[in-house]
Image (cartoon, rainbow, N blue to C red; front, top):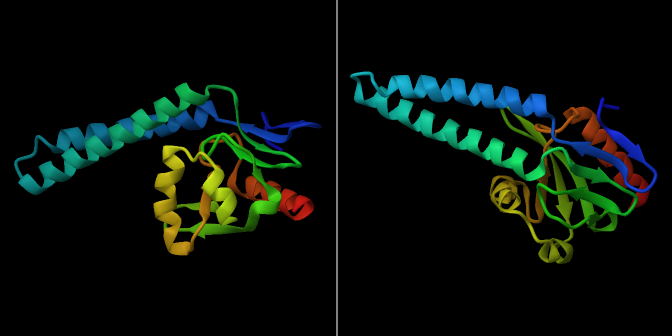
Length: 173
């Protein structure tokens, strides 16, 4: 179990945003944005355009990370409880284990995530966040009714989170 993962009889397992992961992601975004900004001063128009896009894109990612930290702060972001999974990055409601049809891994060349296949009726009742709706576009190629769960910003790693979610899903569905 991670350093700031808590086990609570009522809430099950809870995870918070990791401030160090956010800080290091911000440093990386700022570095790439500065490199992109420098590239805009180059005489080659193609390099200047690519640099401008890099600077704008990674500045937007940095702003997103800062707003996420401002929104959630140090409160619990993800809870694995006997009733279901609560991920405030997806929706403010608990997704019942009985409504989760499958838990799978999504992989791309540079990342991976946990993908929940949720019953269509329950998915329609959830008040999905903007980020969750946008991420459904990414996972739409995997099939309908997909919700991605990421360990990227949390105080745990991918493998631990995947095991915690699949164990709870198998136990409580």
